[in-house]
Image (cartoon, rainbow, N blue to C red; front, side, top):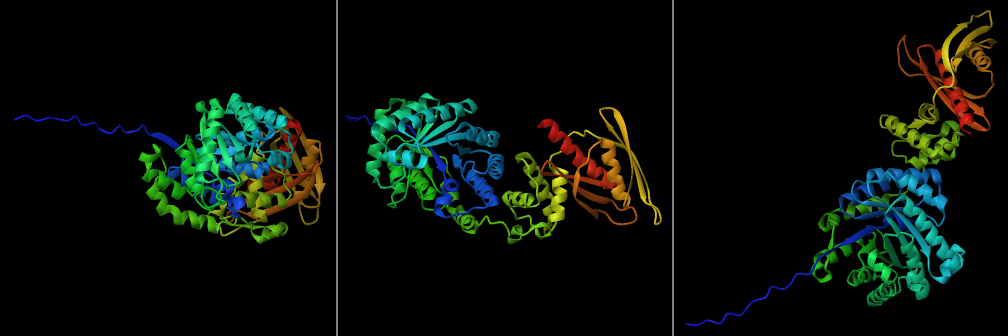
Length: 483
């Protein structure tokens, strides 16, 4: 018996490509009327990182101190995902963003720019030639900082095709590793956006060498479908939101691409099923997010009350309210000390915040060191103080009478240092109990229109005051030397 065997061919499995999923919830939140607090942004970043989002996009810098601290904190909290932050079309802003972002495990600088005539003229105030120059210059500057630079062509679907091609070529030529094409109007149907993407890729051959992303607004409630169409037509990065409606839904998009990865020929890293379970947590985070500082922060002095739940922005506002003008590093140090103290207390008042600033901010090498002091006082005699200081190996002594031992000690300090500072405030409190209790003092000195605070701790309250005064004085001397 003879059998005819027909050769059976296995269906060829298409090569799967990794598709980058970028969460833009925090970046688009203000446009959606969603206000997340600092703490909520940190929580959301950690959650998205655990859920496998490839990129977490955050807001850039408008307020240099508060925003830089936010970027730094998110950058350190995210362990796996890329953290992407936008830089404005100027080198100073790009430098500031990079300084805050650079310690992320995987940092990315983004350069968004208008490419449609309306946005160029009325939002950026630039002519086409000036816009091309700004794009190339900013991308090149960012490329000096990191290899991962992304150019974002805002409102690309309403741009003149020839100018769009010029802008993309300028960005890629300057070193962009990726570009994103945006349908900001959100008026294209999925097949229309796919056709637009295909035409652009054909018109700009250089796009074959970089990552091509897509962002579709959800004006027609078709952003998820448009993004999927982009994935089927060459896009290898898609932007989505885990909450809100300004862009494709992260949950819907990842579920679609995961379920039909055979049809799209892509693989996504987002943990789709875990994301479904975490959707409620994300919704609660975004619904809850108010980010408002407590009402007491609008008051003055002693009316400042903070709790462990307050954000760095609230602490920075309270510090400014107390009269301090601190830099970014000092605000970071103050917030770190605030969190330690607030974790064990119901609230932190103005005096305690003053002490935190005194101990954590502007810690400098001592110009003056205390060698010795002697205090004499009584009920029938004026207080007298003798203080010996050392600076650059040379000892100087000051002797003075005063209205009480503290006043005498401070006058003697001024004499020994050879300079007079205006005393803005002097605070005393006990930090331990009993006969050998430690006393803590905070001294605030005013110099050159700025406040400088110092902290001292000793079993001798006068000694604590001298140490606090010296601490503040050394900050003034250091600041003058640096300036």
